[in-house]
Length: 413
Image 1 (cartoon, rainbow, N blue to C red):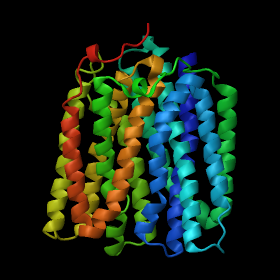
Image 2: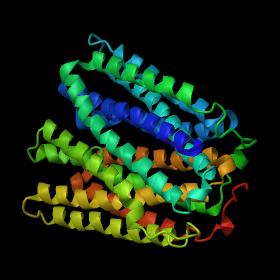
Image 3: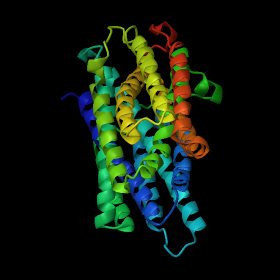
Image 4: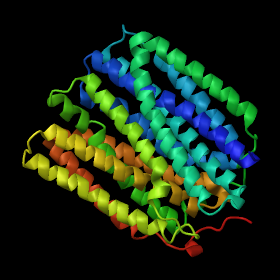
């Protein structure tokens, strides 16, 4: 194993540990506050700052990773997550409901910052290590990105199971302490194993330079906003509430979401075998992004018709549709995650990735907010219509993606 492969393996393993605890945290908070009698809309509110914090964290994290190095930002992200877990563990049952919600929102915001600092640094590390291992072929970047992204999401699904198990066996506070201890071990591995200045370069000197990305990155960021908004607009609140109303209990819903996330991650890892690769890295991959976006947009339209017509066994129609949605969405997401690194210059890869994932965080925030609002206004039907509209916009954004590297920032040789 050469140095580039070793660093890729260390970064991937570190992010696995982080994602495992991040998935467990979401389930811990959902289960704990659901048991306390909080409504689904209130539960969604608990995660709004978590999503909103990621917008600034990605932009700032990309710039900081370029200026101070990827390893240092991985370290900061892990320390921040441990801090968020510690604050959550201090939650006092004697506090009022308003105080409890405010405290959890604050702690979740800190964890949201941690997540996106860590994600930006980790994804940037893939670009840096791939640039050091070009002899492995043109398709290597896609394979590394797909495996990293897919395995990360599968780990998040396992984290959902872990969160429920920890809450049942250890309780809320002790579970948070256990996860903080796990992350402390991951932190030790990062500090002692990765080059301290990996990915360090000259950062942008102005806001104009930071935001003035090339045409490919700008179009891809726009597509990312509506792609993830289209998922979360019915996945975060609308789907769980709909399944509750159809007679599913919380364990059934949580288990299904965990299984869906694991399957979604596995499809992401397999995406390179589903998308024809080109020697230039764009001429086949960009048309694939357009085709899969168009296919994905059809699914919520069909589901909306099923809901409007009150199809028999509607909850199972929705579950089946969600599985199809997850498959097409996973391929879309994997192709997008590859393209951002294909368009990014390796010298400032962290800034480019941070800009792109700030768009990703904005999409999750908008989707989470609309998921509660649209379900309240018109049930699952409105949420599905909202998803279809956003996916139509996603497809339009992919039409602006350049298919050659003439419009991208060249990587240093």
